Length: 406
Image (tube, rainbow, N blue to C red; front, side, top):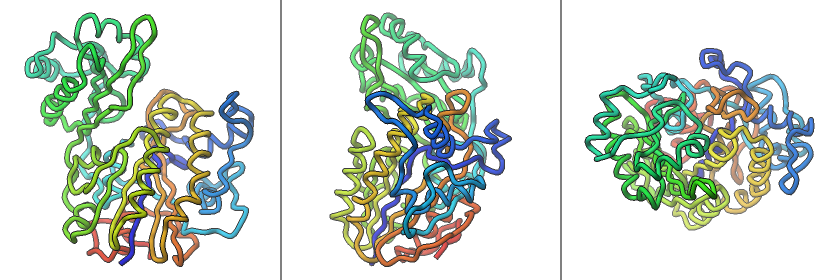
């Protein structure tokens, strides 16, 4: 039996979705705008990177051509310079929104049909009864924030008051999220996690996709910084995901990064959650090297999104893309004949765009492996085609949505 490795480059979109105007994102283009900014000298940062965006290995897999399919243009420097080594295409999300769970669930074959609940961009943002329930059940002295905010900005603004008062910082965004930031030492990391578990139950009637624990350290004098011990508390996905099919078939599953959190730890097999893209890719490649026949490794690389997209950091995002590109040969090296690797994304987060939120974009689909076909697979009308194709490759029954490109 074949094996499969599915890599989600979190937020690496390649151009506005057909309905991007509904979200204020018409014209957004994460990869394209980064490439254009780098070509114009706006991606330079001393000690980090300079010059045009250089992604030769991803270009050889068809990334530039996938971008062309989505936007009508190949971004600067992404034209393939050697024979293409993959199937390439681009995919459109059918679920509403532009958030991580809906993107990943659709990739795994189950598009979200009902809309998520969102909190208004007002102050306060949360319903009074929700806030009162959280305070009472978690035994809190109150909360801070209660508004839409950038995570780093609100910690800078309210971190000192949080330490003084013991009130956690609660905030949201355009995504379906309820985020709680607290100091690991002054408030306690386990207490933060337990508060988030309570918040998960409190938020369920509002159809909130994720409650996110955002621990941080530091002081008012030295400044505050978020740590790597973030944890997401997602609602469970609908039944019938690719992971459910793999588990039912008795296949080996390894989930790396925040995949376990995204799928509410259902059918996620052995979970590995290192800190940082490099460590996550290391763990995924090590796991794949030992994976038995018929097995599956599912990897999310979140730093593109959290460290650079939300912070509107073009040089940092460009450097992260180049760092991943440099390791594509390692991915090729771990694949045996018949194995499949798919590289894709879950949404966009254009660092040249206004605000700090995700952008509603199409995503690349790059599928390759020793002995597998190469060529164009065109526009896929749902992310679920990815899960359907992986399921077909692994000899699983068809999923409930999606059409395999094989």
